[in-house]
Length: 412
Ligand SMILES: Nc1ncnc2c1ncn2[C@@H]1O[C@H](COP(=O)(O)OP(=O)(O)O)[C@@H](O)[C@H]1O
Ligand SMILES: [Mg+2]
Image (cartoon, rainbow, N blue to C red; front, side, top):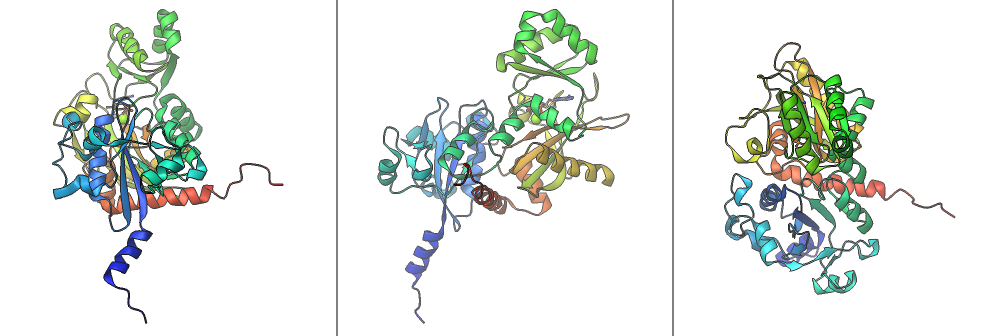
């Protein structure tokens, strides 16, 4: 029998490797968080299985690539900051280096170019050759928030006919819209807090009517939120009527739809914040339940990213029945929003009294550093970080293959 030499063996292995585009950065306020998530993934992804092409999107929305990712991580890669403040410094994250030094690139919205990365200004096929045939087999959009987690970029992947990690167009956009999400939860008979949805135009045209509408339905404290955003940006806890107007005006800066919710907990007591990681496509599974104990009055932007003192507890201290109920609700929420791949499903629990549990929201691309809640929950459930990344890529390919069975036009 012919013995395969080491070089050939390596070559065969390389030829079989999947080429994964890791997309990071983006135009949203969570740009720096994304750089941190991407730094962790670049470091941990299984290089025996995957060739990695890092693709950064800068804050102006320009796409940049730097060819092979391994060069970015020489000497184990730059030290990672714990907090996103310094993540945009090229000396700190490999993603920031791609954004500072990379060459312009685009993903062509043409299926036949099979996800060729195009050099800006060239046709997809020309630049395919120019970039040494850098086709991608699958994309992992490690993008949080607007234009990354909201279905817009997922639409581009659909046009390009490429497999991608995470929710599709519909699931991603629903997962971003707290108003539509609640309608789907309610439809699935999942418990949500009482709330009122207002249009920015309603608030601006008749503020008195808007306040009356909120006060007729809810009791203070209430939470005012822009319907489509994340990271607690534009969210206020409102303790009385005096605070309501400024909170609505603030939220109206960030979206045309505003959601006002009944506060869980009370004027003094905080809600308990429980989180579950869900993984899968048509048969999703839930992780153990985790709890975040925010260092501030609620889990605002500062508590999430800047200050110390928000403590994760895994597994959360709950009764068996509560744990079971929460995990089942997480899977039901995932299905109600037609999600795929991954989502972190967040709950609010009354800290006293009846201790009712409410579904708060789904996050379709949750923070993904090695120490973020989503990977930590899976680690505690038995799936280590590197394996989790592999599993997500496999789920992307599985969904892509499943979808390719669908006909888009009437067959003759
Ligand atoms: N109805 C509520 N009752 C109590 N706390 C809330 C409520 N809604 C939001 N919060 C607090 O605000 C934080 C951010 O709200 P959330 O809806 O999760 O928005 P984001 O999408 O920005 O994470 C929550 O983690 C929680 O601390
Ligand atoms: Mg949240």
